[in-house]
Image (cartoon, rainbow, N blue to C red):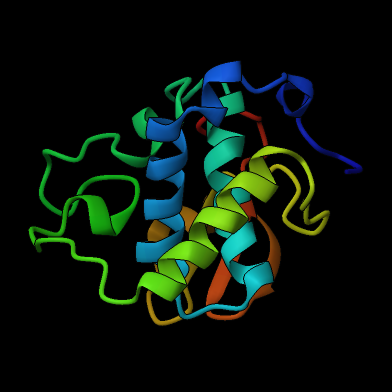
Length: 153
């Protein structure tokens, strides 16, 4: 997309198609966005994969999704460190998350308005970091941002 960071051209490692990596991506989609539209869930997956491409983040899906998961409420994705046991309550929603995970990983779904976003938040919170980033779009309850510099900031 126009104005995207150069790292967006970095190919994803082949390992992103492995079962463990796809499970981490499906978990991220399911626990962060299962109530959203397919487009909204795909946008969350795109952010996760953007971080895999971005040299400022871990180079695996599981590494991105569970980054800082041992720090209570200080991780990248709230479900990974909120202290609550994670159970898949809706197998049909999880199957949708798995399908979306593979489609976004394979490049079958790409949302230009999300572009190189590496951050998002739900519209009922107001994180301080958002003021230092470029707002890209809002899809469902999530507002997506990208950094100005391409890395952490």
